[in-house]
Amino acid sequence: MWNASTGVYQDTASESVRFNSANGVVVDSYTGLQWQAMGSAGTYFWDASAGAGSAQAYCMSQTTGNYDDWRLPTSEELMTLVDYTIASSPMIDTAVFSNTQFFYWTSTVYEAKPGFALSW
Image 1 (cartoon, rainbow, N blue to C red):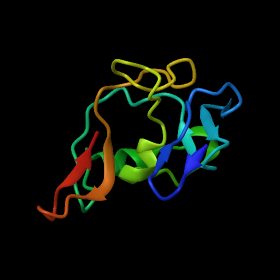
Image 2 (cartoon, rainbow, N blue to C red):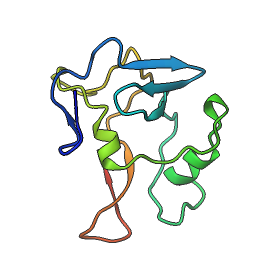
Image 3 (tube, rainbow, N blue to C red):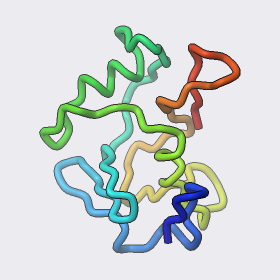
Image 4 (tube, rainbow, N blue to C red):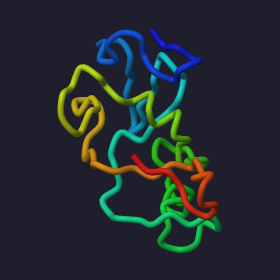
């Protein structure tokens, strides 16, 4: 069950009915968020102005599932995908999400250093 105040699931996040996937898009039935099923093949940097080659520019160029409004998730949104029943990286349902990586950019700015973002 989703705990909105903590941003973490209170029980296992690997319930079989949680994710629905079609056309490269995964819908999370717990949060209502949509995710790309496959991680990017390239490596990108974070840039507040979304310059060429940045993670932000990559997201904005995507048309997966015929959607053109892709963006970086917030750190809270990204943490909803963590499956705490998995003991080692990647701690995500790899049957649903392919080409998983060990680090992901978020849109959440690192408060101690404006111009920097959090990654997981």
